[in-house]
Length: 273
Picture 1 (tube, rainbow, N blue to C red):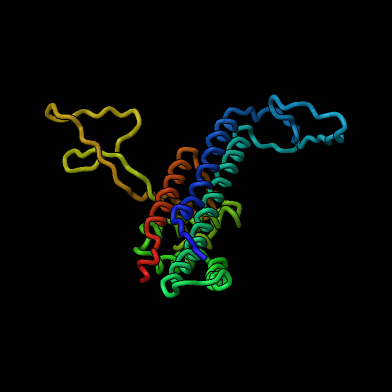
Picture 2: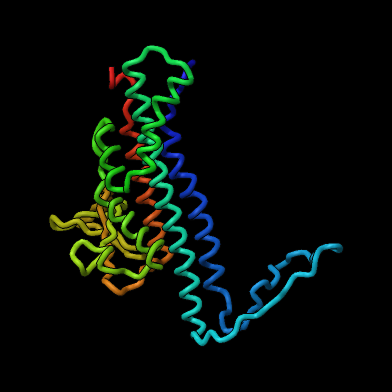
């Protein structure tokens, strides 16, 4: 039996979720922002340009919810936050799934390093404990186990531990931060990598902003640089976690950076040999 290991499949777990989620966010956010929340709506109101129900189908039940006294702008904000929060959860779930796949991948590489050949049954027996352990470990434990088997430690371990804390708060506490979610009893910190474009002036790095005009010095042009930095976002106890569409794009970039870092540090059978 021949087994071919494909490191790019690991990154693909995150990248597929990233593509689907960003597409949904980019379509959904403008739709919510343009919607008129001042008008009452049937829950099952037909979609724009949707065809009428076909003959022979059962008659759908229609109903209208009333009693929601929130202002239209509050309803819009709630819908927008729901969409962005669900997108965040999908990305966090994909990161978790990628780490589980890496845990099994490492077990395969380690087994191949000590066995020249194997049967299908032996292969299944070899990876079953790793797959079971990956599913049982909490996120910090899984991250630690994976780091031990990589060719080099991950750059973004601390960042994605904070990523998981935000996911837990969204899933289990409806996004409302409690002391359980914090390290200091006061603040939940989300840290994620992003790329910064900047130029240097007077020994200082100055980040480039949209619409900003940059003048050269002494008739010379401006040299633009880029490097990876870590951004932080803080949510205090009692605050509800929310994101803007622009922030979500940066979160997506952080997930891409993590997936790329992970796939580039996967071990090979030659490493084990």
